[in-house]
Image 1 (cartoon, one colour):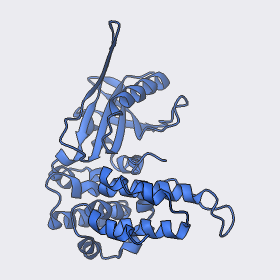
Image 2: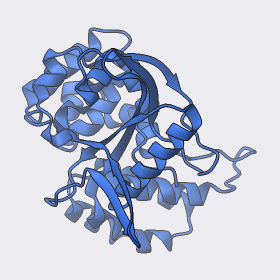
Image 3: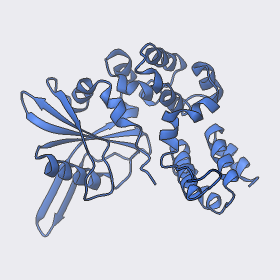
Length: 292
C-alpha cells in the first residue's frame, strides 16, 4: 500500500520553494536550490521532498520535508533513518521537517528520536509542524501557495468565507487552479459535502475523477492488461478503500475493513468506495454497510 501521506508534495512545494524553505526552517536568508532525488536504495520508500538549500549563516545543507496525513508512532525512528540516508547520499547536513496534516489525538508529538544502548546514545532532532496549529492567515496573506489547498484544516480555516477566499486565490492563478480539487477534498472535513459542491460549483463526480483526488485517495490502483481483465485490481481496490477510510474517519473507519475484505465482487467494492467518499458520518456508512 502506498503511504497515505503522499499528497503530491513535490508539486506543491515547487510552486514557491524559496518561501517554503524559509517557512519550514524559519531561516530568513535561506534560498532553495535543486529539488533532489529522494529515493534511497536501502529502503523501498521515497521521502516526500528533499531540497538542497543555502544560507549565508549555515552554508549548504538539505531540507527534508516529510508529510504525513496522520502522525504515526514510528515517525521518530523514520525521521532518523531518512535524515541519515540523505546525508550519506548527498554528503550534506540535513534539516528534517515532519509536517502532520490531520490531527489524530491530544498526545504531544515528539520532536526527536533518542536511544541509549549500553551507554551509546543516539539523538535525531527534527522540526514538527502540525497544520491544524498553523494560522490560516499565513496561507492567505503570505506568498505561500503550497498551503492554500490545506486552508480548511488550518487554524481558523474552517469558515465558509475563508474557504471561498482560498478558492478565489487558486482560481486567479492558472498554475494553481488544478489545486482546487485538493482544497475541495480537505473542505469535506469541515463542511457539508453539499456546501462544498456549491462553493466549488461542481458535483462530487468531478471531484472523484480529478487526478489530484485520485492521487490522494486511490494511489497505486492499476488497470488490467486487457479490457475487462481484473488482474490484481481487487487488492488495489481494497488498498484504496482502506486509504479512503483512514483519510476520512481515522482508526474508527478502519474497523470496517475486516468485513469489506471478505467481499469478492469487484463492482461491489467500487460501490462501497464511492459510498465512503459521499457519506458524512460513520453512522451513515454503517447503515450502508449493512446492505452488503
